[in-house]
Amino acid sequence: MTTAYATHPHYLNHFHPAHNHPERPERLKSVWQILDEAGLINRMKSIIPLPVDRNLILNVHHENMVRMLELIGVQDKAVLIDADTYALPESYETARLAAGGVVQVIEAVLTGEAINGLAAVRPPGHHAVIGRPMGFCLLNNISIGARFAQKIHNIERVLIVDFDVHHGNGTQDIFYEDPSVLFISLHQYGNLFYPGSGALHDVGRNAGEGYTINVPLPAGHGDSSYIALFEQIVRPAALRFQPELILVSAGFDGHWIDPLAGMRLTLNGFARMTRELIRMADDLCSGKIVFVMEGGYDLVALGHGFRNIAHSLLGDVTISDPLGADKGKYPDILPIIEQVKKQHNLP
Image 1 (spheres, one colour):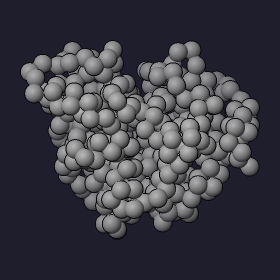
Image 2 (cartoon, one colour):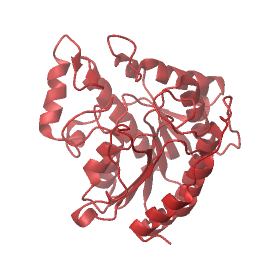
Image 3 (tube, one colour):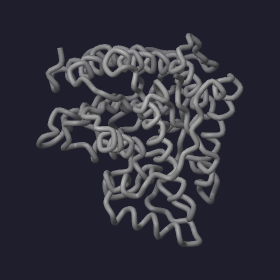
Image 4 (cartoon, one colour):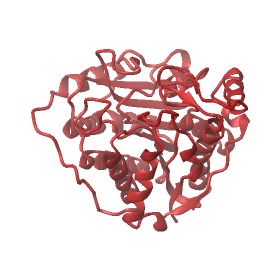
């Protein structure tokens, strides 16, 4: 068995008419190019996605939202859904292909066709809430995939880890009252940073209380902070939850060079987080893990970030980091770790 890899040329059909939007086709082109130059694409099981079934979308999104996107699909102009989020007539079909790529990689992993997987898809998904698109996202790809695993493959417990620099508010919204999905988000927080959600005390509601773990971070944290969080928060929470499948919202906008955020991660740090997640999957759910592309707006950091995910999934020791690290002191992560541990009763 090998790593399942899904992507599609039609993902390039979604683009802002002004051609200067941060979430642009060049992001995916960079991933393709760097994976190809490293000889990684031919080593993975290629999956050509099909559009996700409408009923799978309705597992996580309202009917009215789906109808809105379908209506945009029959118009002949671009629509600005909010200040950040746009759609073309082709965008809904592209979003269905993005969610379809995630679903089909999960299918390959859960049926034994692959041991793990990588979905290089766009538009991204983790900001799309139950009732509307937002934050560059039209459909919540990873949430659709999680519900697919539960409803079609009878997976009882899914762990979703989101290390995109922006809080995965849409994923939180969808599973906020659901104890069958543990959602852990490590994100920049404060000073009106987008989307403004993901406070420490947002822990879930009703039956889902305790199954949302937010780790809000001020700007400036780097590799050592994130590795400590994975060791002292993410792993203990995963061990307690005992997932049958791990899904990862993989965004590389926490890199120090990214233009839209203020974290100071390096590609080496991201690779260490990736390998820790794979070790968790090996320990807890027979290696069943799927990485899903979210944000990341520096093309070099994004492309090499996904190269390192592919290396890690394939068992390579290679880490590609042409950008290195920035300089300066990092904030102390220990007070945040103690706050999160106290909030969630972690050892």
